[in-house]
Image (cartoon, rainbow, N blue to C red; front, side, top):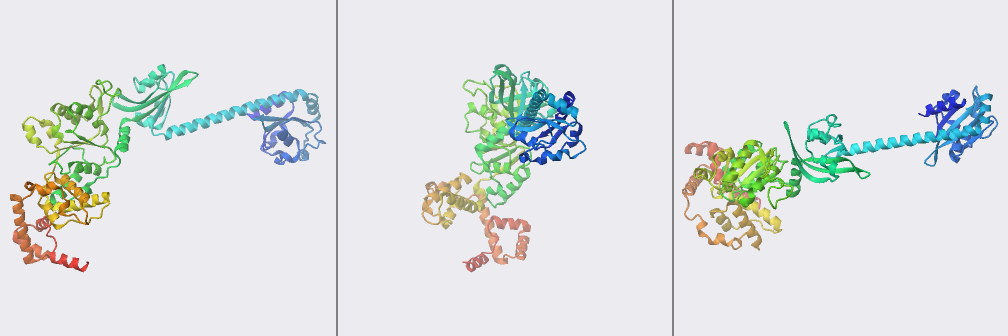
Length: 599
């Protein structure tokens, strides 16, 4: 651009032209001056007192009528074959600063006469050319600034995790970021320039163009052939002189919003199978089974008495699965009023009923999208909702109360109950088809009285937990307490045992749990004690007595245990399991010796 201006000046005035920048580097030139392009005039020293330096410093024009003898002229200039005989210089001023110089140069007498004779007109012309260059510089700077701003905005747009899309006043898509490409599964090139109506039919963004009123965090569902979009959208109008010029919107997937809401409201759930305490064979087997099916998409039904830990087990399955990063949504079907249960489970649409949130509400199934839903006390689910639940399980889609759209969900279902669902099916209280749909993988948690070997482990676990939370120094249980815990029937199972330990930790004043610190109900309710042992308990006691006698006779070595297994006509593995169940793995004498040597 600068060279074109130099050529135009030279052609119009019939003299040579040279243009330098503020570093005194030649940017453009004609004739002999063209050879100097990229060279530095006057040694690059503005303070040397020569003409270009003076123009840059003073921001004034100078006329040199006799270049050979004028002290303002650099003597090094005229060391070539051609000598400069005269020059008119004019500053290029931008933002009150001299950013360059335009020079008209005469190399012969004819050019000298033309230059000096018409110096006033030529100087005026140079000022106009200077202003032209200044305008071009301003234009380039504005263009560069706009380009920089555009690049900054693009960088910002691409760094935002939300999808960003903008439309003009005709509803044509003008901008979008990479996240939008991912959300719509469409490349940016296929979106820019297209009417929004073709991409998101009947989008509320189009109404913003008419009303000029934006909206925030609005749920939008789009049913497009072979595609289903479920978004949360915030749309803001763009104004230009009070007129709506366009709309920009931020878009998030509903499933991402649910995950964020879940993580903010529940925090990290780190319950794992290590929280399921016990060394009994049945608990070991259950944990192994649950681990095997944790990544399966099949439905799981956990049965067992109240307090056996069905919720903990369900959460452990979730955290062991490939859905662990997704939500774990727990719903107690028996604790929510029947009138509210349907909308709580499945959500409701906008304007579904009087008094409801005017924007509608998502249900627990939608909240569990990408994770696990735990339906506790499933036996309390009313029959009319069992039909709807069956439909959700079959089709993996939810229809909100008062709505018509089917919303796809990706969930794992774990249900639990302390009721006999098979009996309820026979009596018509529970749908057979739903029962079989839920009971794909059955897991039964036995009551605590059927795994007495786990009681000491649970006692110590809950003692550590509650002494830490209450900041107390209690290091064990009185032998009478241990005996009481072993013989108590535990109708409330693990939950009751934990409550008993927590109560005792609060009450105890010594460094071990003693009888007076136990809950009164444990000391008074004799009917909960196993004074009349069951047949199973009697057989277990008889089995333990036989094993003790055999061990006393043969010893605890591997060879001795092989003899015992052979005499009892059982496998060595079965013997080891029974010894573990009765806590007879080690020689008491050896244990006592080890204790004495280390205390």
